[in-house]
Image (cartoon, rainbow, N blue to C red; front, side):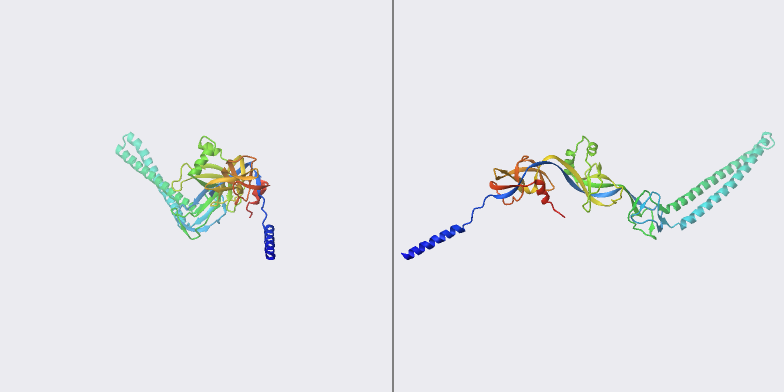
Length: 394
């Protein structure tokens, strides 16, 4: 009897201990929630761009010769007509002297021919009255006239020889002038691949240098066919010139991530798709008064896209299953997943076209383990503070 009482006491004590150790049931889990808002948002399409000067002029030699002097340095700003290189002129100088001597010889020939013409003319003038008075025969006059014509022909030949000699001299002088290679435009000197002593000529494939007028620069970027047709549909205007005229100003992001201080204007679009790349090219003009940009720079064009009065939610409030995007809407402290149509994602915000309405409450973050129909405890937070807190900081 005593043993039975002990066993019952132990059992009762064990049952009481188990009841005390049993865990308490937790209440609904707390989640941050926000109210769906509408905002004016500016997003950006980005396109890699190459940068070129307004004019890029290759400098080449007009005559063949050895470089004797390089008068400029890479990166130097030069003005139109400024000497850049000098070529060897020894042979040209000798040719010029010979051509000048040829002009002197031609002038001497002209003087002799003119004297012959004058003498022949005197003879003709003397014989004419004698023939008229029948003192001499007409044959003598005809002979004198033939001599005059011959002398005049020789004078014409001498004049032609002088003109040829003058042309030769001017040609040599021009070549001497071409031996000083000058800047065809004002701009910045590029690379100088050839140094003093190099033989250069007009048929060389490699230019002596390139001068870039960078007072204004052009940034070139391309769109694929889909992007291009989307652009045509969204851009106001009935014709291509109208659409280009109505395009917004664009921004240029430099290679270091900073924004160029001046905005650019889209000036032209190529008239056809490049068959090798399937893209169409745009040209954007930027002012470059401070000469911050150089020919050959790279960057990224930021094309603005404005969304007025669009519904927004934090990106952290969305999740995707099989290509469908959901958010958890809170109704009577219960989370219900609803399908939303996201039109863009900008700065950690999802822009919503349909599926929820302004003012509705949604779960803002921490939805990884949340199930539809789960009871939750709401913790209201401000959308801006939530979005800012999850932006990366560098």
